[in-house]
Image 1 (cartoon, rainbow, N blue to C red):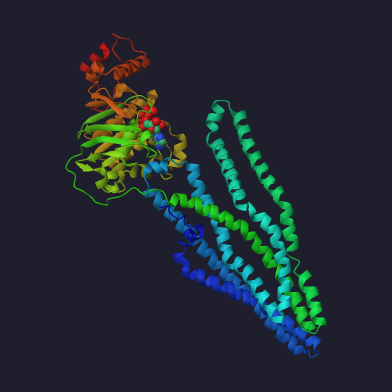
Image 2 (tube, helix red, strand yellow):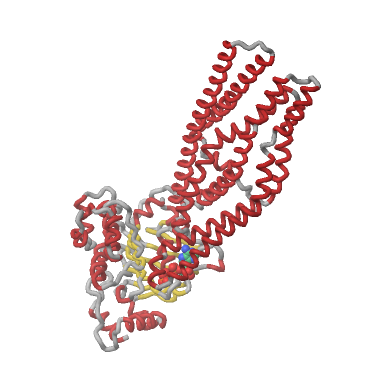
Amino acid sequence: MKQQKESWITILFSFAAPCKGKMTISVFSAIVSVAGGFIPFWAVYKILLAFINQTVTMSDIVFWCLVGGAGYLIRIVCFGISTILAHISAYTILEGIRLKIANRLMKAPLGEVMGRRIGYLKNIIVDKVEEVEPPLAHMIPELLSNLLLPVAIFIWLLAIDWRMGLAVLIAPLLAMIPMFFLMRNYSSQYAAYMDASDHVNSVIIEYVEGIEVVKAFNQSTSSYEKFVGAVRSFKDFTLAWFKSTWKTMNLMMAILPTTLLGVLPVGLLLVQSGSISPAELAMGVILSLSIVGPLMKATTFINEAKSMEFSVEAANELLNLPVLPDSGKEVSIAHHDIVLEHVTFSYDGSKQNDVLRGVSLKMSEGSFTALVGPSGGGKSTVARLIARFWDVTGGSIAIGGYNIKELSIRQLSELISFVTQDNFLFNCSLKENIRLGNPNATDEEVYAAAKAACCDEFIARLEKGYDTPAGDAGRRLSGGEKQRIAIARAILKNAPIVILDEATAFTDPQNEDKIQKSIMALSKGKTLLVIAHRLSTIQNANQIAVLKKGQIVDCGKQQELLNRCPLYADMWKAHVGAKNWSVGEIPQVDTAVPPQMRQTEEKKEVAVNV
Ligand SMILES: Nc1ncnc2c1ncn2[C@@H]1O[C@H](COP(=O)(O)OP(=O)(O)OP(=O)(O)O)[C@@H](O)[C@H]1O
């Protein structure tokens, strides 16, 4: 059955629960403010009446002036209260939306979150949610009074004489005709406008984010042209929309304020026929003029409501991210074997796009497994599935004999240290960045982890050492140095399973040796899974699984694979060739690879014989 789409207003007000009381008082104050706004009109009417009846006295004038002033005061004070409470409510709703999005991002499969661009997430969480505030904060007091006031005036005019009441409707009803034409395509036009706006935003973000590549490849002219093109086409689109509507818009705005054109002739006729008094006509004229301002203001909320609708729907996309089921159970794990059984997976859930097809692999506790294979074969996908960035679409993954879905997400994350080449540093000190691995670690433990990861040397060179804010340091640290900070973090975490996804990518001579040393410290005695293109670092693995097009084509020790797996043998030749190493020559061996990863003399011979 097709699920009914929730309206954006329902979504918005589902966040209003914590501020229900304030919103109610805000609405009530807005209504009192509208009522207060009538008192000055009533006072003027009374004074006019006294003048016309020639019964006016000074004390009457003073009295009605005071009454009018008091009404005005009530209007101002209540409007103020309503506005303040509406703002508090709007910010509470905003807070609720942002917190719920943050919560959903935490509970969604990590892959779902990482698959979205930072610019896209920032645009929704910061900008779009913020766009909800002004209309929301102003709608209650302003839209309410701008709609209630005309309704009340209409009723008052009806009370004076029903014909004068109807006369005041002539202008708004006529204004409805151009408004109808204006609103006919409004939704689709507004959607196109939002698309154009999103496009120009993404081009701007891409231009700024990619400026390094643009300059490096001397693409500044063509990139700038793309940027200018997007900005121009947005301007052209908005101008074209504006031009297509301005005649009808102006016609509507011209007709709407002409309430007097209906009320005055009808009122004069009524006075002539003796149906109403001149004082009542005067009152009718004042009232029909006072209806104009609120009606004009109310029309401005049409745009604001639409903008709110789009913002809420964009936020709702993130609020509806799938949730990774969490068993919430801690199980007692006796060992840390990882077992993949017939694992299939596709990123879009469809069978024909399977990225992994029946992958089975056992990684025993304390062993070293390497995943190798052509680019796009699914190596990183395997690593991410073990860490449950996504759930497998078929088969199972178990740790210590338990399907990882049976473990709580918290327990699973405690079991695994995942190090990739994307090493994010938070905007706090380097010390705190390392301590993220174990928030309870003492300073000494942090320093020890940093030392084991070969970070101490470069951190000591920084003016504030470990207290250097990562934001400042980040700009000065090399890729390898940042990676060693991430490895120090993982060392401090001391998880029994270590997954290194291309963690040896930063292979500049200065960093390579140190990264290898730090990986050695990290992986001692752990169940280690390494994804590496540099085959020399994984020759000593207990098993090397060769993954091609989502299937394990072979699995064994280096020598076995060299003997029987042509794909691995070719990869090895290519790797060795890439290292400018010729047959018969002793290869340049990685000097400081982890114990499991270190090459034995015997294996060097094997390598030489390839
Ligand atoms: N987030 C994603 N959404 C959709 N498809 C993806 C995603 N990540 C990877 N893929 C696709 O899945 C396939 C396997 O990718 P994966 O990154 O696992 O391969 P890999 O063997 O690690 O490649 P490489 O050695 O180049 O890093 C590729 O075709 C890739 O395009």
